[in-house]
Amino acid sequence: MLHRLWLIFAQSATVCVAILFVVATFKPEWLPVRPEPAPKPVASAPAPATVPAIAVSAGPAPAGSFHDAVTRAMPAVVNISTTKEVPVQRSPLLSDPLFRRFFGDQFGEDTQRAASLGSGVLVSATGYILTNHHVVDAADEIKVALSDGRTMLAKVVGIDPETDLAVLRVDAERLPAITFGRSEALRIGDQVLAIGNPFGVGQTVTSGIVSALGRSGLHINTFENFIQTDAAINPGNSGGALVDAHGDLVGINTAIYSRTGGSMGIGFAIPVSTAKTVLEQIVKSGSVTRGWIGVEVQEITPALAESFKLGDARGAIVAGVLRGGPADRAGVKPGDVLTAINGKTVSDPQAMLNLVAGLQPGSSAKMSLRRQAQSLDLEVTVGRRPKPQPRE
Image (cartoon, rainbow, N blue to C red; front, side):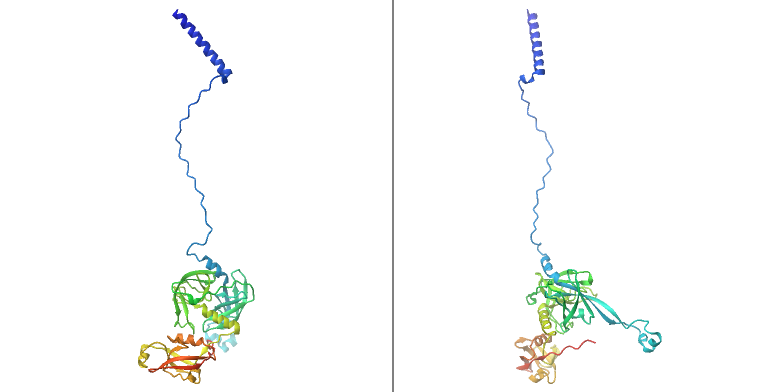
């Protein structure tokens, strides 16, 4: 009986397996769908970090940059090249007429043409240029190279050797003129830029600070009131622009103190206030007119103060008076000490020279002086300063 039950069970199982195989093969959709187990998470390498987009600002120039000032001023700075005849140093034998009678001029001429470079500043859109007198002195030909690459001939409108300034003009219109600043507003420590064409390499810019104001007694010019700066002023910078941090003209670069010929950190510029006065007079009349009273003055040294029993070293002592000159007619005598002119203090001979030069010829001026222990005021009629004698 048990054997028969086992046989029936085995046959039933075989039939069920056969039916399941047939259905799975031909009709799999009849079978119920078993849910697949959720896949186990697989550890993976971390995704590379995404670089965030960076916003780049196109704002103003970084702090400390003088880009805007240079952009304003540089187009107005020009290169000046000159040529002139200069004597040739030769043996006296070669210049002897008897020697030349037999050998002719085969040994060359007595002169040769020399070229030099300097800088200048366009001060008007109609072509007026400020530069140094020594840049164009005795030049036969003056060429001006503008910042846009144009080159043109320039003519001298007028010169003022006593301040070492000259005014040129080129035949052009709508030129990029510089903006005038106020040299009176400069302070020691203010930042300045020197723009020029040193060594003929093209326009360059150097920066520095104002080291001193009102420098005089350097024996560079007759009238000295220099701005001193440590901005490098190299050969070829003469006549170029000294500008402030806004790009406004505050001086004309003129000279350097140097033992090697290169910049040593001591440069001098003519204040724009002086340059403007000279420019206006030259453009108007072709020359510069200054006041004059006909005296020679000296600095009051301790020895002179003791000799004249002055007791005070302030002012300028009159060393000589031109007979028949304005001061002589007013009663000024040698040994008098000038202390003020029209109420403005005379601190030294250079200050006295500058004050008198600023007076209008033909006008009256009050001179305050000390004569021995007595103070007195004299009225003087200002004369016209004679033109300086040309250098030999």
